[in-house]
Image (cartoon, rainbow, N blue to C red; front, side, top):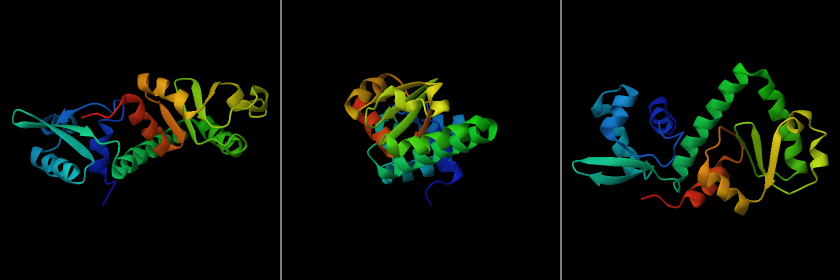
Length: 181
């Protein structure tokens, strides 16, 4: 089963730095779980190509394989859980998402992510005047861009929240940061 709590906990360790590498022992200690339990799951991840491994002495340094569809699914599930938690704690987030859904079609948005207080949109570049009809969006700094321009930002920063376009976000991120290992 993909996406159980243990799998999401393991992948969640990489959420803030998708290029990080952890040994199986480090994962076990960070999650406060028994080593054999984590070792079994990490080896499953290696077999399923969710993890790429680098042998370091007697250990395996595990990295996310951002080219694996299963990795993208797990990262997407983590982002959806973060979004649900945010909606529960910040009522204005639901209103923002509602506005984004309305604006999504008009701007042909394929990716909407948040970096701090900036809303980053990949879609058709339209007049900033059009955004004014969406008050919650208009109150934030909106960066409209195309996929190629976005790679510079993604090479430096990780989104604090992804609203739409999870798969495209992780694809662009892996392109921007280069293939690891």
